[in-house]
Image (tube, rainbow, N blue to C red; front, side, top):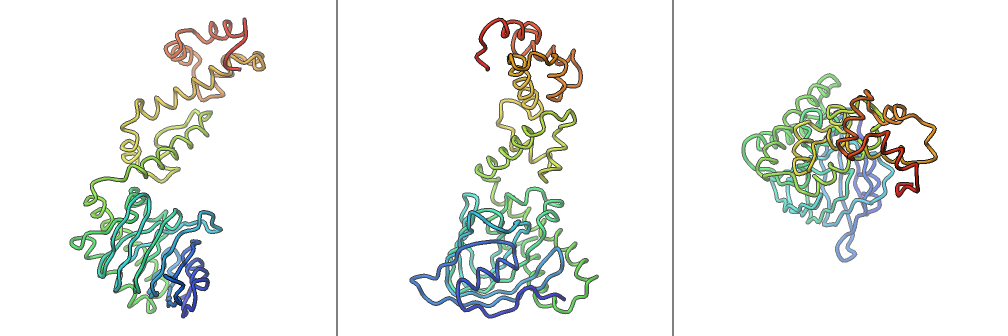
Length: 316
């Protein structure tokens, strides 16, 4: 087995390097009142999953805004001893011995801790999202202490205990099984917290719209394409956008029409045909484009272009 990190940590700077190299995250560490900092980390690498046993003196951790790491893992922590307060995505949770929570190292977070001991699993984010797309909603939620989370808590402890004895085949098998157990535990936590936070909805809403805007010219742009690219479920996308005045595909059509309208009004683009403009923004049938353009703006594309090119256009 490959050992990513197994060392005694004597100061905050050393912790930053060891933790960052093990879990792909940059952060700043402060000990309260300038006190000395100490810690110990043992991290074992399964490939797409890492298993860790860690202990640290009291400290405050903040993720740096700029990071040289990709942040491709999600970190699942089981508190063995000590207490901490975790902040992420507008949520805060008090974590005590026996509690579990998930952290996304790719986004800003804060941890304020007593002296703590933690058992942790870092899992490839794409693995977990593939099984449980709503995983992003679960950061900084204290998971329930019964049902699937309780079962998974025992699994974490056993993984820490037996990880050094597992061969590569067993590692891969345990990684696959752990993803599904983790998804069950997080699902219970999401249900108990009632709903994804509005801030996270806004983040994903902007991701969805930004992806769509960048691909308006692609006639194959669809909800399914967006869901697959952003690793979100269709159900989750529909839930995020349920308060929007238009469905996602109607919004995409409106954005395409706005781009076509601007180009039709441009004197610099009057050499381009109406069909060329329509096709360049993802429309596949000129008759359909003309019909929806007229319904949106009250004029046919030809009449609109003629009126705009007859005089100064406010869209120039």
